[in-house]
Length: 314
Image (cartoon, rainbow, N blue to C red; front, side, top):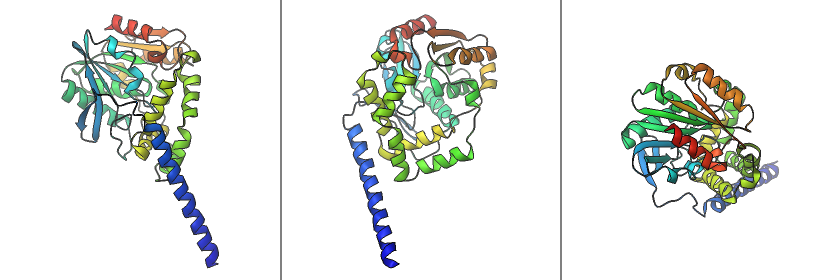
């Protein structure tokens, strides 16, 4: 009996050690190129962790806020920002838990990001700011705008999630999944399985781009690197995201704010017309624009058209 226990213990230890080595090797391979590192990078010392940001240009402030999906970072706007610096003081940041920003072992919520964008606007920008946000980040930008009158100017949103999906809350099954992913070695292994080069290629082809020929290898590699920066700490924002801790009901805030708002939708994105019309239903002052032959990331797939709409609106 003792021999059997010893054998099981040795096999288990060996398996855990092997998984740990695989996790470390994968992280090294996907971050060694430092694709996200720029000489212009600055850091804002926020109370929950250091926030990487970049500032360029002169004029009225404009803040870009990336999506909350795995691998997201300020990189998603790299084809836009340099073309706006002649009239705007352009800021891009990596949200807490993403890109090159710190990734603490906490539960990430909509309210947390609302506090971050509010504090960043007050303490770093220091002036009334227009905001451009993508996807799952739209809700906390709307809440920040609603709860902090006078700090935010015009709002531009790109492919926000549906108002229905924002109301979904963590179930017991999703809470358990979050717990598993946050475990030290096994959770990291699961996270790495779900965030491979192949998985990002598939996401770009099926969800992010309409024209697959426009997908560049560097897009995949930058998303992959962003998902691996800070090692196993990267999995905590991912766990909160898939468990729906970042969701919140924004309908009351959407009805109440009177800022100028433009929502862009990728014309080929599934159900996008219904999603955007629901926003317009609750606030009929919202302008809607559809970008042809694009899906979730028109700022990468069709940046010229996105820039044209931004400049007209601002």
